[in-house]
Length: 261
Image (cartoon, rainbow, N blue to C red; front, top):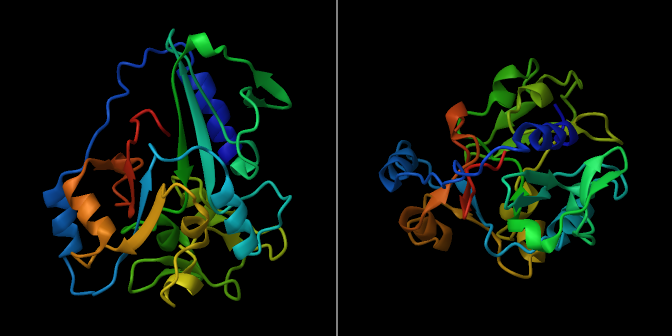
């Protein structure tokens, strides 16, 4: 299922449902700390997204495309931003036009196949943006299903793709429960976010973190107790996507609505 299918199903699946289940489920700091200390590695990259700070400008998506050679006009992105609109009568809409590359320039919700849904301001209970990217899972299913070892996990936890080994079978794309993988339009190999590995290993921030003017995205070493994001993750209310899959994502969210898919 690609991202578009996901969003279509999200709209179909939740429209008409009540939003009482939209409570936020937080991680237990003791569990996070136990996972951090389970090995002796000195570096484990983790990402923090503050949904309260995201305004859906799309600067992060644009910067990522330019940094990582993703064709600008291709409808694929390593990172993207989803917009959620929940109405007072319990309907929920979600879209991500072009991955939010150009931001959300209209209030109309993209429903697919050139169809749009207009939602009146007075009917909206709440609306918010959710940046997404590869979760760099502790237990990455994409690594497990790759038959040739082209997808592998570095000692610092980041999941990488070796284009010279990838045979384009697509198993990893099907195996990822978060829909973050796609075929690169030019190289025809599996593609995904790698936390801008070429940058972070040189002490630089990821392109998306650097481009975000509101500090909605942060990256750090969760093994370092003095790292700002480690302090936030261990002391504030944070959540992860699809905890039920047991993949142990290393992308943490502040302000994550449980209804976010």
